[in-house]
Picture 1 (spheres, rainbow, N blue to C red):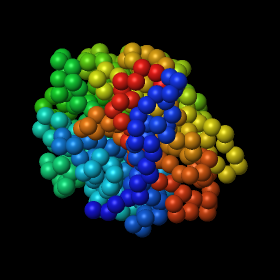
Picture 2: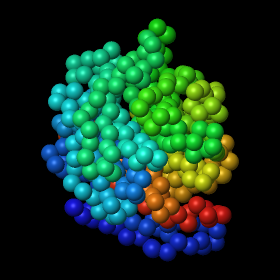
Picture 3: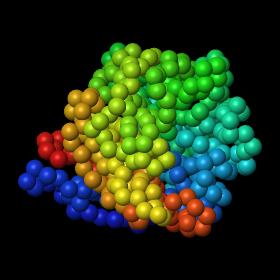
Picture 4: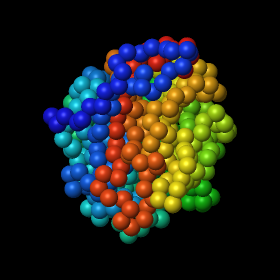
Length: 383
């Protein structure tokens, strides 16, 4: 087990003048993946889940020769048995040669303990989506060992559709009585006839043995799903420059209402916005993502990681906290067995990431860090 440098903040949680600061609530922060380590150019697109036994699993894309999308990419993982304080050595779950395996989405069946990891394969010479395929690996021993990758494309695509990608982020298991233990997986599918990319939910009521394909939503793009209140789902969508959208499902992911702009959440402009993450805990919703900031000639505006809280199922986000005031990108949230919240996110110590220009992204230009917030954040009346 390799230990990662631990960054300690004030251990106690308290409220001063009805205001909480990041330094007061972050219990600890660790680096999990760092660009240039283990012979990998860049690590991006994190996914993270807590297993039935409480082990924390962190997955991501290992872009081997370049930080650019769709270059040769593996899907890799590390495990933590102490709530993210230390991490194992890296394990390759799906190996790409010239092709790229992208958009990892992890999902835990808390009834059986089985862990699923989905990824999309982009062929090396064809980025049209025509040759894209969907792949799955599973673990039944708490993420210690994994199955051989399976091609599941024909089982999860609607007729006449191509695979655009999963999530990215993580899937969920529903908790409400009506859809108890239903597994929900976010997927993006492209309608060849209409030329449209739309979000859908894949859902399983038999512990992932088979998956049903939900109806197309009104929008398409990188998104993640949570249970906004028992038996009701919400998704949050990267919807363009400076804008996010959200929509709800009241039938367990079979269909979605019309997406609306989420005006309470600030986001970035560069590259058409940024993926973000959403989590439900005891009917309280949490959202993490970069709020954006000042760009310059050498740096993007992906910065200022925030966490938002909603007490009305995602209709409004009245509470928010700034967690990190430097570079911040894609993120994913998981609730630990203790009730604390862990967040994995793309980050660096610069004011925004270096722009994607030759020679401008040296080793260490980006990390995937995990920070942990205490469960008392859930009960605080004022942020």
